[in-house]
Length: 430
Image 1 (tube, rainbow, N blue to C red):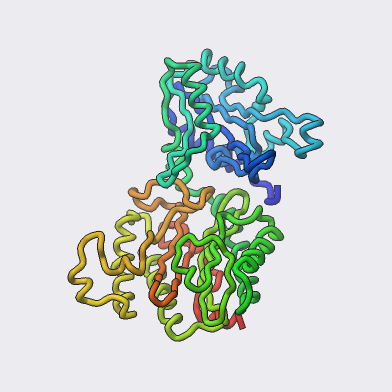
Image 2: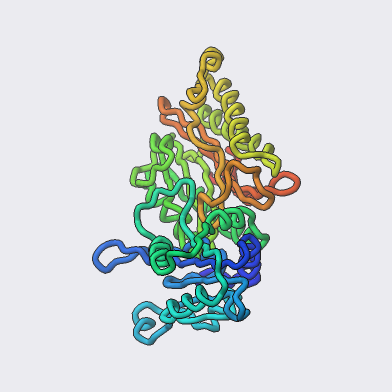
């Protein structure tokens, strides 16, 4: 692995917190992700199931965690199943975890080879006094997946094999737990943010008229990898000119031109945790008067939004207040009029022409992390703050995004050391 070893106490604590949420006489199963195919014999880079990693720290495919807190034999209350290393497998694909290594990473003492899973699972289901079987699914509110996952296949098999058992959903429990970051998780996210900041500063010294968007992307990945990241936390958005009014522009194939803006929505991954940063910079190294005017309006909205964030705030109420602040800024910019505001209808507000996305989302092991958007912002939860103004008629789009932790008093801005003031960006570019 590229990252520094994580203290196994994090994963031990996470499992203890999860067990407290289970009903008595329960068994819970968590699967690793599959290695996904491309075509022919090609595969995508492996990315671990976030829930599985959260509970084990294991970054290996074909792995299963079974937790049965009330099992009579304490040795089998936590069991990790792993693929058995063999000489041929390691010749082709490299090292696989030994039982001792898996124990050191996860803190799970009982590790059994995956080839014995069905025998042991049947023993646990039959002899463990199991009344509630918790199975995992992807219940993310933005999920639209048609590919069958390892979890989905396991659910089918389990229901067919044990049709009379009582099944429960573990996804809501995991979402509740993962929304509140432990101090060690915050440290890992800070590392991802710091790597992102280093890359952004590198890009500030690289961008000039004539460079290609994909060349800028390459500067980011260079700095990410050399600092221990596996790469981008998500598909990078390197959007120059008219592309920066497109929220998820990912082609990154145009030439950056003089007098244009370059919107950079790019974050590093570190130890499976993610940063999500957006900055908008002038290709020429200096903002025009109009560009700076709009830029500072977005920055004021962001700073006002950050000041409003607390554990007493519900996200959707917060977002509505941000929209009102944005409305005032758009009025000052003469993009909307008082008459338009007076005549607007709910859902068709004048500001929506120029600000048409949410202010924030949760961040963690997933870029759009799990959690309840209708609940109050939990202490220890991590959020993005990313207002933007997109003026199609001017071919001008600006978004600024920071990552903050909700604390008892205000927030901790993980991105506070990354340049954001227009004057500072100009100075660093020149």
